[in-house]
Image 1: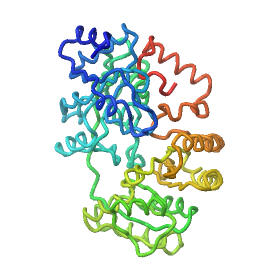
Image 2: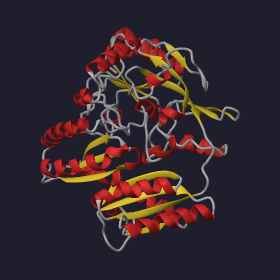
Image 3: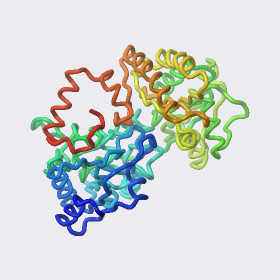
Image 4: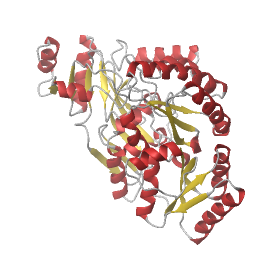
Length: 460
Protein backbone atom coordinates (compact mmCIF):
# COMPACT_ATOMS: atom_id res chain seq x y z
CA UNK A 1 0.00 0.00 0.00
CA UNK A 2 2.15 2.82 -1.29
CA UNK A 3 -0.58 5.48 -1.30
CA UNK A 4 0.07 7.69 1.76
CA UNK A 5 -3.67 8.20 2.17
CA UNK A 6 -4.12 4.51 2.95
CA UNK A 7 -1.29 4.61 5.48
CA UNK A 8 -3.08 7.48 7.17
CA UNK A 9 -6.37 5.53 7.08
CA UNK A 10 -4.78 2.51 8.77
CA UNK A 11 -3.09 4.77 11.31
CA UNK A 12 -6.44 6.29 12.26
CA UNK A 13 -8.35 2.97 12.25
CA UNK A 14 -5.99 0.23 13.51
CA UNK A 15 -7.17 -3.26 12.61
CA UNK A 16 -9.31 -2.17 9.64
CA UNK A 17 -9.21 -4.77 6.89
CA UNK A 18 -7.87 -3.13 3.71
CA UNK A 19 -6.79 -4.53 0.35
CA UNK A 20 -5.19 -3.17 -2.79
CA UNK A 21 -4.80 -6.62 -4.34
CA UNK A 22 -5.61 -6.37 -8.08
CA UNK A 23 -8.05 -9.27 -7.85
CA UNK A 24 -9.95 -7.62 -4.99
CA UNK A 25 -10.01 -4.28 -6.82
CA UNK A 26 -11.39 -5.96 -9.94
CA UNK A 27 -13.97 -8.03 -8.06
CA UNK A 28 -15.29 -5.39 -5.68
CA UNK A 29 -15.03 -2.43 -8.06
CA UNK A 30 -17.79 -3.55 -10.41
CA UNK A 31 -21.39 -4.75 -10.46
CA UNK A 32 -23.30 -6.91 -12.94
CA UNK A 33 -23.18 -4.23 -15.66
CA UNK A 34 -19.56 -5.13 -16.57
CA UNK A 35 -19.38 -1.94 -18.64
CA UNK A 36 -16.81 0.14 -16.74
CA UNK A 37 -13.26 -0.87 -15.93
CA UNK A 38 -12.88 -1.04 -12.13
CA UNK A 39 -10.24 1.29 -10.70
CA UNK A 40 -10.81 1.75 -6.95
CA UNK A 41 -8.26 3.21 -4.59
CA UNK A 42 -8.70 0.24 -2.25
CA UNK A 43 -11.30 -2.04 -0.68
CA UNK A 44 -12.08 -1.80 3.03
CA UNK A 45 -14.18 -4.21 5.08
CA UNK A 46 -15.44 -2.52 8.25
CA UNK A 47 -16.72 -4.94 10.87
CA UNK A 48 -18.79 -2.56 12.99
CA UNK A 49 -20.81 0.63 12.92
CA UNK A 50 -17.95 2.41 14.66
CA UNK A 51 -15.56 1.38 11.89
CA UNK A 52 -17.98 2.55 9.19
CA UNK A 53 -18.25 5.92 10.91
CA UNK A 54 -14.47 6.16 11.24
CA UNK A 55 -13.96 5.32 7.56
CA UNK A 56 -16.50 7.92 6.44
CA UNK A 57 -15.04 10.59 8.74
CA UNK A 58 -11.60 9.88 7.34
CA UNK A 59 -12.90 10.04 3.75
CA UNK A 60 -14.76 13.26 4.53
CA UNK A 61 -11.58 14.85 5.87
CA UNK A 62 -9.34 13.51 3.12
CA UNK A 63 -11.78 14.28 0.29
CA UNK A 64 -11.84 10.64 -0.84
CA UNK A 65 -14.98 9.37 -2.60
CA UNK A 66 -16.74 6.28 -1.24
CA UNK A 67 -18.67 3.56 -3.06
CA UNK A 68 -20.76 1.43 -0.66
CA UNK A 69 -20.68 -2.21 -1.74
CA UNK A 70 -23.03 -5.10 -1.04
CA UNK A 71 -23.68 -8.09 -3.27
CA UNK A 72 -23.19 -5.91 -6.37
CA UNK A 73 -26.00 -7.67 -8.24
CA UNK A 74 -27.29 -4.35 -9.59
CA UNK A 75 -27.73 -3.69 -13.29
CA UNK A 76 -27.37 0.11 -13.44
CA UNK A 77 -23.74 0.70 -12.50
CA UNK A 78 -24.66 1.88 -9.01
CA UNK A 79 -21.82 -0.03 -7.32
CA UNK A 80 -19.08 0.72 -9.86
CA UNK A 81 -15.81 2.24 -8.61
CA UNK A 82 -13.97 3.41 -11.74
CA UNK A 83 -12.30 6.66 -10.62
CA UNK A 84 -10.16 5.96 -7.57
CA UNK A 85 -12.97 5.65 -5.03
CA UNK A 86 -12.66 3.78 -1.76
CA UNK A 87 -14.98 0.77 -1.87
CA UNK A 88 -16.62 0.14 1.50
CA UNK A 89 -17.70 -3.50 1.44
CA UNK A 90 -20.32 -4.52 4.00
CA UNK A 91 -19.52 -8.24 3.64
CA UNK A 92 -18.23 -8.57 7.22
CA UNK A 93 -21.35 -6.92 8.69
CA UNK A 94 -23.47 -9.95 7.99
CA UNK A 95 -25.18 -10.91 11.25
CA UNK A 96 -28.81 -11.23 12.23
CA UNK A 97 -28.88 -9.07 15.36
CA UNK A 98 -32.25 -9.89 16.85
CA UNK A 99 -35.85 -11.00 16.51
CA UNK A 100 -38.80 -9.40 18.29
CA UNK A 101 -41.79 -11.77 18.45
CA UNK A 102 -44.20 -9.07 19.61
CA UNK A 103 -43.34 -6.52 16.93
CA UNK A 104 -42.59 -9.34 14.49
CA UNK A 105 -39.41 -7.63 13.34
CA UNK A 106 -35.96 -8.88 12.45
CA UNK A 107 -32.96 -6.59 12.94
CA UNK A 108 -29.99 -7.29 10.67
CA UNK A 109 -26.70 -5.85 9.52
CA UNK A 110 -26.52 -4.62 5.92
CA UNK A 111 -24.33 -7.43 4.58
CA UNK A 112 -26.86 -10.17 5.35
CA UNK A 113 -28.00 -11.89 2.13
CA UNK A 114 -31.69 -11.71 1.32
CA UNK A 115 -31.98 -15.50 1.48
CA UNK A 116 -30.57 -15.51 5.02
CA UNK A 117 -33.25 -13.03 6.07
CA UNK A 118 -35.94 -15.19 4.47
CA UNK A 119 -34.62 -18.28 6.26
CA UNK A 120 -34.39 -16.47 9.60
CA UNK A 121 -38.00 -15.34 9.28
CA UNK A 122 -39.05 -18.89 8.40
CA UNK A 123 -37.36 -20.23 11.54
CA UNK A 124 -39.76 -18.08 13.56
CA UNK A 125 -42.79 -19.21 11.56
CA UNK A 126 -42.96 -15.91 9.67
CA UNK A 127 -42.23 -14.53 6.20
CA UNK A 128 -40.01 -11.82 4.78
CA UNK A 129 -41.79 -11.53 1.44
CA UNK A 130 -39.41 -9.56 -0.80
CA UNK A 131 -38.03 -12.11 -3.25
CA UNK A 132 -36.15 -12.41 -6.54
CA UNK A 133 -33.69 -14.71 -8.27
CA UNK A 134 -30.53 -13.12 -6.81
CA UNK A 135 -31.70 -13.87 -3.26
CA UNK A 136 -28.60 -15.90 -2.44
CA UNK A 137 -26.05 -13.24 -3.39
CA UNK A 138 -27.74 -9.83 -3.00
CA UNK A 139 -27.54 -8.13 0.39
CA UNK A 140 -30.16 -6.31 2.44
CA UNK A 141 -28.23 -3.04 2.39
CA UNK A 142 -28.28 -3.06 -1.41
CA UNK A 143 -31.95 -4.05 -1.47
CA UNK A 144 -32.73 -1.00 0.64
CA UNK A 145 -30.49 1.28 -1.41
CA UNK A 146 -32.44 0.41 -4.58
CA UNK A 147 -35.88 -0.24 -3.03
CA UNK A 148 -35.74 -3.72 -4.58
CA UNK A 149 -38.95 -5.21 -5.92
CA UNK A 150 -38.93 -8.69 -7.43
CA UNK A 151 -41.50 -11.33 -8.21
CA UNK A 152 -44.02 -10.80 -5.37
CA UNK A 153 -44.59 -7.04 -5.57
CA UNK A 154 -48.13 -7.64 -6.78
CA UNK A 155 -49.05 -8.92 -3.31
CA UNK A 156 -46.44 -7.54 -0.94
CA UNK A 157 -45.03 -4.37 -2.49
CA UNK A 158 -41.39 -3.28 -2.66
CA UNK A 159 -38.67 -3.32 0.00
CA UNK A 160 -39.88 0.07 1.24
CA UNK A 161 -43.03 -1.51 2.72
CA UNK A 162 -40.95 -3.81 4.95
CA UNK A 163 -38.38 -1.45 6.48
CA UNK A 164 -39.48 -0.44 9.98
CA UNK A 165 -36.26 1.29 10.98
CA UNK A 166 -32.78 2.15 9.72
CA UNK A 167 -29.45 3.17 11.11
CA UNK A 168 -27.49 5.18 8.55
CA UNK A 169 -24.05 6.80 8.52
CA UNK A 170 -24.22 10.08 6.58
CA UNK A 171 -21.52 11.62 4.40
CA UNK A 172 -20.06 13.39 7.45
CA UNK A 173 -19.87 10.21 9.53
CA UNK A 174 -22.89 11.02 11.69
CA UNK A 175 -25.05 8.06 12.78
CA UNK A 176 -28.81 8.49 12.33
CA UNK A 177 -31.39 6.19 13.95
CA UNK A 178 -34.45 6.52 11.73
CA UNK A 179 -37.98 5.61 12.88
CA UNK A 180 -36.78 3.00 15.42
CA UNK A 181 -39.29 0.37 14.33
CA UNK A 182 -42.37 2.45 15.10
CA UNK A 183 -45.63 1.74 13.28
CA UNK A 184 -46.97 5.25 13.90
CA UNK A 185 -44.58 8.18 14.02
CA UNK A 186 -46.04 11.54 12.98
CA UNK A 187 -43.03 13.55 14.09
CA UNK A 188 -42.00 15.33 10.93
CA UNK A 189 -40.17 14.13 7.84
CA UNK A 190 -39.63 10.37 7.68
CA UNK A 191 -35.97 10.41 6.65
CA UNK A 192 -35.96 6.62 6.47
CA UNK A 193 -37.77 6.83 3.15
CA UNK A 194 -35.19 9.25 1.75
CA UNK A 195 -32.52 6.61 2.30
CA UNK A 196 -34.56 3.79 0.74
CA UNK A 197 -33.89 3.99 -2.98
CA UNK A 198 -31.10 6.60 -2.64
CA UNK A 199 -28.45 4.26 -4.13
CA UNK A 200 -25.84 5.02 -1.48
CA UNK A 201 -25.67 8.70 -2.39
CA UNK A 202 -26.85 9.95 1.02
CA UNK A 203 -25.16 7.52 3.37
CA UNK A 204 -24.40 3.91 4.27
CA UNK A 205 -27.06 1.68 5.80
CA UNK A 206 -25.44 -0.04 8.81
CA UNK A 207 -28.51 -1.67 10.38
CA UNK A 208 -32.07 -2.40 9.31
CA UNK A 209 -35.15 -3.44 11.25
CA UNK A 210 -37.40 -5.40 8.90
CA UNK A 211 -41.07 -6.14 9.34
CA UNK A 212 -42.16 -9.76 8.95
CA UNK A 213 -45.60 -11.12 8.16
CA UNK A 214 -47.57 -14.34 8.45
CA UNK A 215 -46.72 -16.95 5.83
CA UNK A 216 -49.32 -17.31 3.08
CA UNK A 217 -51.49 -20.40 2.79
CA UNK A 218 -50.33 -23.26 0.56
CA UNK A 219 -49.92 -22.19 -3.04
CA UNK A 220 -49.74 -23.61 -6.52
CA UNK A 221 -47.85 -22.48 -9.59
CA UNK A 222 -49.39 -22.40 -13.05
CA UNK A 223 -47.58 -22.02 -16.35
CA UNK A 224 -49.69 -20.76 -19.24
CA UNK A 225 -48.95 -20.53 -22.95
CA UNK A 226 -50.41 -17.34 -24.40
CA UNK A 227 -50.86 -16.92 -28.17
CA UNK A 228 -50.73 -13.12 -28.49
CA UNK A 229 -49.61 -10.00 -26.66
CA UNK A 230 -53.12 -8.55 -26.33
CA UNK A 231 -54.21 -11.69 -24.43
CA UNK A 232 -51.65 -11.17 -21.65
CA UNK A 233 -53.60 -8.46 -19.86
CA UNK A 234 -56.88 -10.33 -20.29
CA UNK A 235 -55.33 -13.32 -18.55
CA UNK A 236 -53.99 -11.04 -15.81
CA UNK A 237 -57.34 -9.33 -15.28
CA UNK A 238 -59.12 -12.66 -14.96
CA UNK A 239 -56.40 -14.07 -12.66
CA UNK A 240 -56.65 -11.07 -10.36
CA UNK A 241 -60.43 -11.44 -10.30
CA UNK A 242 -60.54 -15.20 -9.72
CA UNK A 243 -57.41 -15.97 -7.69
CA UNK A 244 -55.52 -14.68 -4.68
CA UNK A 245 -52.31 -13.87 -6.54
CA UNK A 246 -48.81 -14.16 -5.12
CA UNK A 247 -47.05 -13.44 -8.40
CA UNK A 248 -47.81 -12.93 -12.08
CA UNK A 249 -44.80 -12.97 -14.43
CA UNK A 250 -44.41 -13.20 -18.19
CA UNK A 251 -41.66 -14.03 -20.68
CA UNK A 252 -41.36 -14.61 -24.40
CA UNK A 253 -40.45 -17.59 -26.56
CA UNK A 254 -36.95 -16.13 -27.00
CA UNK A 255 -36.45 -16.01 -23.25
CA UNK A 256 -37.63 -19.61 -22.96
CA UNK A 257 -35.17 -20.73 -25.62
CA UNK A 258 -32.24 -19.33 -23.65
CA UNK A 259 -33.39 -20.85 -20.35
CA UNK A 260 -33.84 -24.25 -21.99
CA UNK A 261 -30.33 -24.01 -23.43
CA UNK A 262 -29.18 -23.29 -19.87
CA UNK A 263 -30.60 -26.58 -18.57
CA UNK A 264 -34.29 -26.00 -17.82
CA UNK A 265 -36.93 -28.51 -18.88
CA UNK A 266 -39.20 -27.98 -21.89
CA UNK A 267 -42.72 -27.40 -20.51
CA UNK A 268 -44.82 -28.02 -23.65
CA UNK A 269 -44.51 -29.96 -26.87
CA UNK A 270 -45.01 -26.83 -28.96
CA UNK A 271 -43.47 -23.36 -28.72
CA UNK A 272 -45.71 -20.36 -28.10
CA UNK A 273 -45.12 -16.59 -28.36
CA UNK A 274 -45.71 -15.73 -24.68
CA UNK A 275 -45.75 -17.49 -21.33
CA UNK A 276 -47.12 -16.61 -17.91
CA UNK A 277 -45.98 -17.98 -14.57
CA UNK A 278 -48.46 -17.25 -11.82
CA UNK A 279 -48.51 -18.35 -8.19
CA UNK A 280 -51.72 -18.25 -6.18
CA UNK A 281 -53.27 -19.42 -2.92
CA UNK A 282 -54.50 -23.01 -2.98
CA UNK A 283 -55.47 -23.53 0.65
CA UNK A 284 -58.60 -25.61 0.09
CA UNK A 285 -60.82 -27.29 -2.46
CA UNK A 286 -62.62 -24.03 -3.20
CA UNK A 287 -59.38 -22.27 -4.12
CA UNK A 288 -58.28 -25.17 -6.31
CA UNK A 289 -61.67 -25.18 -8.03
CA UNK A 290 -61.31 -21.45 -8.68
CA UNK A 291 -57.91 -22.06 -10.31
CA UNK A 292 -59.35 -24.77 -12.54
CA UNK A 293 -62.26 -22.51 -13.48
CA UNK A 294 -59.85 -19.69 -14.32
CA UNK A 295 -57.82 -21.96 -16.57
CA UNK A 296 -60.87 -23.35 -18.36
CA UNK A 297 -62.27 -19.85 -18.99
CA UNK A 298 -58.95 -18.65 -20.43
CA UNK A 299 -58.86 -21.67 -22.73
CA UNK A 300 -62.47 -21.14 -23.86
CA UNK A 301 -61.80 -17.46 -24.62
CA UNK A 302 -58.66 -18.33 -26.59
CA UNK A 303 -56.43 -16.26 -24.28
CA UNK A 304 -54.48 -19.40 -23.35
CA UNK A 305 -53.65 -22.37 -25.58
CA UNK A 306 -51.90 -24.68 -23.12
CA UNK A 307 -51.03 -24.86 -19.45
CA UNK A 308 -49.83 -26.89 -16.51
CA UNK A 309 -50.52 -26.62 -12.76
CA UNK A 310 -47.88 -27.75 -10.27
CA UNK A 311 -48.68 -30.88 -8.29
CA UNK A 312 -45.56 -30.84 -6.07
CA UNK A 313 -42.97 -28.46 -4.68
CA UNK A 314 -40.42 -29.86 -7.11
CA UNK A 315 -42.67 -29.18 -10.09
CA UNK A 316 -43.42 -25.67 -8.82
CA UNK A 317 -39.67 -24.99 -8.57
CA UNK A 318 -39.19 -26.36 -12.09
CA UNK A 319 -41.85 -24.02 -13.46
CA UNK A 320 -40.39 -21.04 -11.62
CA UNK A 321 -36.96 -21.82 -13.02
CA UNK A 322 -38.28 -20.98 -16.48
CA UNK A 323 -38.74 -17.38 -15.31
CA UNK A 324 -36.05 -16.98 -12.66
CA UNK A 325 -33.33 -18.50 -14.81
CA UNK A 326 -33.64 -15.95 -17.60
CA UNK A 327 -31.14 -13.36 -16.35
CA UNK A 328 -28.45 -15.97 -15.72
CA UNK A 329 -29.03 -17.60 -19.10
CA UNK A 330 -28.65 -14.25 -20.89
CA UNK A 331 -25.51 -13.15 -19.04
CA UNK A 332 -23.02 -14.76 -21.49
CA UNK A 333 -24.51 -12.59 -24.26
CA UNK A 334 -23.63 -9.34 -22.41
CA UNK A 335 -27.14 -7.90 -22.73
CA UNK A 336 -27.95 -4.21 -22.72
CA UNK A 337 -30.83 -3.96 -20.27
CA UNK A 338 -33.75 -1.60 -19.94
CA UNK A 339 -35.81 -1.93 -16.75
CA UNK A 340 -38.92 0.17 -17.28
CA UNK A 341 -42.35 0.62 -15.76
CA UNK A 342 -45.71 2.01 -16.75
CA UNK A 343 -49.11 1.93 -15.12
CA UNK A 344 -50.62 -1.54 -15.39
CA UNK A 345 -53.45 -0.21 -17.56
CA UNK A 346 -50.88 1.22 -20.02
CA UNK A 347 -48.94 -2.04 -20.46
CA UNK A 348 -50.66 -3.31 -23.65
CA UNK A 349 -50.35 -0.04 -25.57
CA UNK A 350 -46.80 0.50 -24.39
CA UNK A 351 -45.73 -3.04 -25.29
CA UNK A 352 -47.22 -2.73 -28.76
CA UNK A 353 -45.36 0.53 -29.40
CA UNK A 354 -42.15 -0.87 -27.94
CA UNK A 355 -42.26 -4.01 -30.03
CA UNK A 356 -42.50 -1.93 -33.19
CA UNK A 357 -39.80 0.49 -32.02
CA UNK A 358 -37.37 -2.25 -31.03
CA UNK A 359 -37.93 -4.20 -34.24
CA UNK A 360 -37.04 -1.06 -36.22
CA UNK A 361 -34.21 0.06 -33.93
CA UNK A 362 -32.57 -3.33 -33.50
CA UNK A 363 -33.19 -5.17 -36.80
CA UNK A 364 -30.05 -7.29 -36.42
CA UNK A 365 -30.11 -7.74 -32.62
CA UNK A 366 -32.00 -10.32 -30.58
CA UNK A 367 -34.33 -8.65 -28.07
CA UNK A 368 -35.62 -10.67 -25.10
CA UNK A 369 -38.60 -9.52 -23.05
CA UNK A 370 -39.71 -10.63 -19.60
CA UNK A 371 -41.07 -8.98 -16.52
CA UNK A 372 -43.48 -8.45 -13.68
CA UNK A 373 -46.47 -7.62 -15.81
CA UNK A 374 -48.74 -7.58 -12.75
CA UNK A 375 -47.02 -4.41 -11.48
CA UNK A 376 -46.22 -2.79 -14.83
CA UNK A 377 -42.48 -3.59 -14.77
CA UNK A 378 -40.95 -4.82 -18.03
CA UNK A 379 -37.36 -5.95 -18.64
CA UNK A 380 -35.99 -5.46 -22.17
CA UNK A 381 -32.71 -7.24 -22.92
CA UNK A 382 -30.80 -6.53 -26.13
CA UNK A 383 -28.20 -9.25 -26.75
CA UNK A 384 -24.80 -8.23 -28.11
CA UNK A 385 -23.72 -9.98 -31.31
CA UNK A 386 -20.42 -11.74 -30.66
CA UNK A 387 -18.67 -9.94 -33.52
CA UNK A 388 -19.73 -6.41 -32.51
CA UNK A 389 -17.43 -4.16 -30.50
CA UNK A 390 -18.90 -3.49 -27.05
CA UNK A 391 -18.57 0.31 -27.25
CA UNK A 392 -20.33 0.36 -30.62
CA UNK A 393 -23.04 -1.94 -29.28
CA UNK A 394 -23.71 0.31 -26.28
CA UNK A 395 -23.77 3.38 -28.54
CA UNK A 396 -26.46 1.84 -30.76
CA UNK A 397 -28.47 0.71 -27.77
CA UNK A 398 -28.36 4.12 -26.10
CA UNK A 399 -29.68 5.74 -29.27
CA UNK A 400 -32.73 3.48 -29.19
CA UNK A 401 -33.07 4.01 -25.43
CA UNK A 402 -33.56 7.72 -26.13
CA UNK A 403 -36.50 6.81 -28.36
CA UNK A 404 -37.79 4.44 -25.70
CA UNK A 405 -37.64 7.24 -23.12
CA UNK A 406 -39.85 9.40 -25.34
CA UNK A 407 -42.40 6.58 -25.53
CA UNK A 408 -42.26 6.08 -21.78
CA UNK A 409 -42.88 9.78 -21.25
CA UNK A 410 -46.03 9.62 -23.39
CA UNK A 411 -47.29 6.76 -21.23
CA UNK A 412 -46.25 8.40 -17.94
CA UNK A 413 -43.70 5.67 -17.24
CA UNK A 414 -40.24 5.42 -15.67
CA UNK A 415 -36.84 4.51 -17.13
CA UNK A 416 -36.05 2.60 -13.92
CA UNK A 417 -38.57 0.37 -12.21
CA UNK A 418 -36.40 -1.46 -9.67
CA UNK A 419 -32.69 -1.37 -10.57
CA UNK A 420 -32.04 2.29 -9.81
CA UNK A 421 -30.48 5.02 -11.95
CA UNK A 422 -26.77 4.49 -11.19
CA UNK A 423 -24.51 5.37 -14.10
CA UNK A 424 -26.44 3.59 -16.83
CA UNK A 425 -29.65 5.60 -16.69
CA UNK A 426 -28.37 8.91 -15.38
CA UNK A 427 -28.66 10.65 -18.79
CA UNK A 428 -32.42 10.05 -18.74
CA UNK A 429 -33.28 11.00 -15.16
CA UNK A 430 -34.83 14.21 -16.49
CA UNK A 431 -37.43 12.18 -18.38
CA UNK A 432 -38.88 11.00 -15.07
CA UNK A 433 -38.13 13.86 -12.69
CA UNK A 434 -38.76 17.56 -13.29
CA UNK A 435 -36.03 20.18 -13.00
CA UNK A 436 -37.55 21.28 -9.70
CA UNK A 437 -37.48 17.73 -8.34
CA UNK A 438 -33.87 17.21 -9.38
CA UNK A 439 -32.88 20.52 -7.77
CA UNK A 440 -34.48 19.40 -4.51
CA UNK A 441 -32.73 16.04 -4.76
CA UNK A 442 -29.39 17.83 -5.15
CA UNK A 443 -30.17 20.01 -2.14
CA UNK A 444 -31.00 16.95 -0.05
CA UNK A 445 -27.76 15.28 -1.04
CA UNK A 446 -25.80 18.41 -0.15
CA UNK A 447 -27.35 18.41 3.32
CA UNK A 448 -26.54 14.75 3.97
CA UNK A 449 -23.21 14.70 2.14
CA UNK A 450 -21.79 18.25 1.96
CA UNK A 451 -18.48 17.21 0.35
CA UNK A 452 -20.17 14.92 -2.18
CA UNK A 453 -18.14 11.84 -1.23
CA UNK A 454 -21.00 9.31 -1.10
CA UNK A 455 -21.18 7.32 -4.34
CA UNK A 456 -20.48 10.41 -6.49
CA UNK A 457 -21.62 10.44 -10.09
CA UNK A 458 -24.43 7.98 -9.45
CA UNK A 459 -28.08 8.99 -9.79
CA UNK A 460 -27.34 12.75 -9.96
